[in-house]
Each structure stands twice: as C-alpha cells, then as structure tokens.
Image (tube, rainbow, N blue to C red; front, top):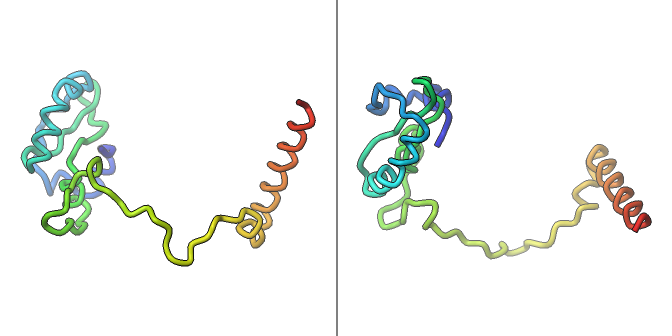
Length: 128
C-alpha cells in the first residue's frame, strides 16, 4: 500500500488501468481477501481507496509495486510474497556485537545523548 500522492509521483495512472471510482475503506475491508487472492495469481490491478471520493491510498501487489518503480522482479521459482519469503539471518563473517561507545565515539551529539541516557538510568536506579 502506498499513498495516492506516491502513486501519482511514480506515474501510476499511466502505468496501470485504475478504476474511476474511489473505494470507501469499509468496502475495501470487505473486498480485501478477494483482492489479495487475485494479486497472488497475478490478476487484478491497483485499487484506489479513500473517503468521500477523495483518493488517499492505493493497494497493489508486490509485483505491481515493482512494475510501478521499475524494479527487477525475482528470478523464476522464487516466491514473490513478502509474507512467505525467507531471508538469511545468520551473521556475516567478521560480524561482531554492536558496541555503543565505539559507535558514539566519532559523533559528539551521539556521545552526549548516550551519556544523558546512562545518567538517567543511573538516577532511576538510585530512586528505587
């Protein structure tokens, strides 16, 4: 889902056939299961919704969003559904735990904020 302004900025009206009617949120809620089912098989198009006929946002599939942005599609055989897709979560070689002091060392504002947070935590510990 994206705002209608984003959809327009990316040239959505020129790239997709969009119905003239703006769907009310309650109607969209009723139709959403069918829209998602259609999108999963590559059917249907973006749906514009909003209140009182004013477009506020657009519901579209991941593949449609890639088309809108001009992004590459995943290779054949890869599940194109973010709710199903799995990502590698293992640390990369050479990864190590984040050290806040090291991270804040090169930025005076971050160092100051970190010192303030630690001072607040110490004072809260004293109040208990």
